[in-house]
Amino acid sequence: MDWMNYVIIPLIKSIVLVLVLLGGAGYMTWGERKLCARFQVRYGPNRAGKFGLLQLVADAGKLFFKEEFIPATVDRVVYVLAPMLSVFVVLVLLAVVPFGPDIHLFGRTIHLYVADVNIGILYVLAVGGIGIYGVVFGGWASNNNYSLLGALRTTAQIISYELPMGLAVVSLLLVAGSFSVVDIVNRQSRVWYVVLQPLGFIIYFIATLAETKRSPFDLPETENELISGFATEYGGIKFALFFLSEYAHIVVASALAAALFLGGWHGPFAAQYPLLGVFYFVVKIVVMLFLFVWVRASLPRIRYDELMSFSWKFLVPLALLNLAVTAVAVVALA
Image (tube, rainbow, N blue to C red; front, side, top):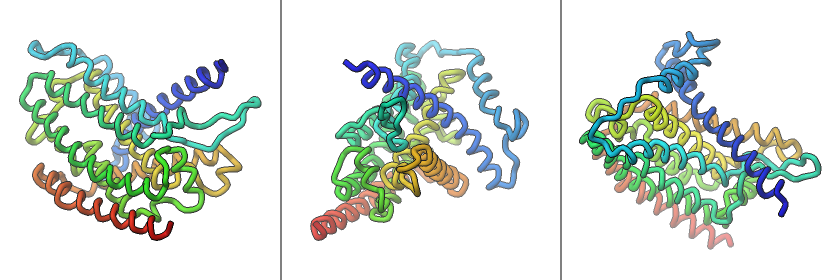
């Protein structure tokens, strides 16, 4: 058995990917504060370090050393495991996403992805669906009505918006002809799928806003009616884990959007210079993250009944229409 190719290199890539994801999720909070401040003609974080870059360190230190308080009536085991599950699920999602072309080091060809799974899209949808359990378990184990309502909202919201998002991805699969995320990226060397599936990309992005519980769909933790929703009874490092998983999910969703619709690492001279391909991929992720923040700064929170109606009465029919048109086009052009 070649331990280097099958164990050591995948382990190194996994560790690097996790560290980059955690760091990116952390500094996403800094970037969001800065951008929202600019949108609202404020300064944002500017005290902790140059440009406020150490604000993340200050916040993490405060949450890590904050006194732990566990209510007496909670289910302690599930209460503690819930935030860990939320973080774990997000961390394993990026395993099938290529973040650059192959590179050659020390006589070896190194693929810039952890695993090329031939059912990569199904893996992403299946593992992403498990993430809801962390929120549901946390809300239920808290033994608090506000927490439970927030968890139930999350369940209904994610189930509703997974349907149009799945239909948008199916339309993309008809065009790509493969379930492998690596294959999908490789087949966008000439034309990005956002050009062939503009409506699918818009549906995917809107559904992703709801999946990640972002404004205007941040109903599971509305402070005006549910205090803090499923996270009401959480504080300290456990609250930080929920907070981290939410922002890590945004980074993962942006990476998937870049890989599925925006050509992944493809760009001018990316095949000749692998690091340039990694740079292109990071730039596309940053563009998607900017869109997330832009929407939050621009749109108000909607009512819960409006959220559900928008999915079932508008997005689902629109996604079905896009799927039907795509299927007809693929058959006609075959």
